[in-house]
Each structure stands twice: as C-alpha cells, then as structure tokens.
Image 1 (cartoon, one colour):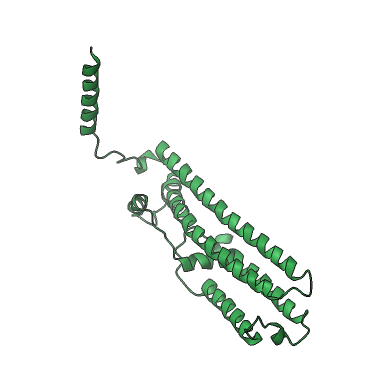
Image 2: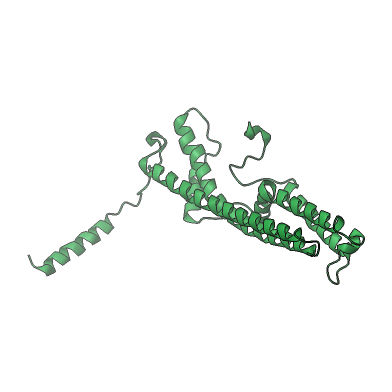
Length: 238
C-alpha cells in the first residue's frame, strides 16, 4: 500500500469521525442515578484546587498588609521626632491592600460558588438521596457559568467581607496608634499636633473620622449577601 493511499484513508477516517460526532456528548454524565461519576470527581477536584489557589492569594495580601503596617508602627514610635502622619500613610497603604484583596476575593468567590454548588447538589444528594434540592435549576446555572464565567458579588460586598474578617481590626489598630501619637507625644494641643502641612488639625481629624465612618457603613449596612458558603450568622458557627 502506498503512502498516498494511506494518507487518503486516514483523512477519510478523520472526516467520517467528525461526521459521526455525537451532538449529545456529555448528556447524562451527571444524571442522578449515576452518582458522582469519575468525571465529576475530577471536575470537583479541579475546582477545589483553583479555590485553594485563590485562597492562598488572599492570605498573601493579608500577610503583606500586616508586615507593612507593623513596620510603619515601629518607625512611628521609634522616636518622638517621627511625624504622626506616618500612621496616616499606613492607613492609606492598608486601604490599597484592602482594594487589591477585595478584587482577589471576587475571583475566589467564582470557584467557591462552583464548589458549593457541587457539594450541595451532587455530593450531599448522593450521601442522602432523601434531601430536597434547594435549587432545581442548579445544572443550568452551573453550565451557564462554565460557558461564560461571571463575577457573583459586587466590589462593595467583597470589601465588606474583607473589612469584617480582617481589615477592620487592622484599621482600628492604626486609629488607636494615631490617637496616641497625637496626644501622648504632643508638645502642643492635640488638635494643633494633628496638622499636616497646610491642612489644619481639624481638617485632618475630620478626614480620618469620615473615612472610618464610611468603612463602618460599608461593613455593617443591611444588605443581601450573594457570596455563598460564608459563615456570617451565629447559627452556622455552632
């Protein structure tokens, strides 16, 4: 048999195979009677891996934030000549870390939402077939998310989550340090000591108070939470 005829037969086989491609490939893969199939197990493991990777990215951002503010606080209290606005720089730096971490949290929530959907609707159902599915359309929603991944939560909600979990205590620490710095180390009135350049002390204090009020409002205002799997209520922590 010549090489030319062999190539023609291979091309014909490829074209026949493409013509006979099953348009319903994948249908029934996740049917209830099949249970968590091998493909589902690999899919779940892959989603767990990606969720873990983004979780580690969040932790790295938090670690850097703690290191930076620790260095700034050490510098601020190392000498009475160190200006108090070093701590204000720390507040601004911590805000940048908060925004970066909130963006990463939104990405992390994509994978966690998928994992929670699989846990609730596949594995929980497989372990206890008598339970009722809370979302009968979960397959349609998960398939749509695989076709076109989308962010599930707003930037404000992501910021609120990170404020509640990590950043409010850090901001509170910086606030206490700044108040101590402009009062205990003051050679004049604390309001005069709070002055930064041409900005009067009352303006600086008002700016700091406005910032912390806004942070508290974002963190604790009533809202409908869209992030899945968060332990926000005391009932879930028992």
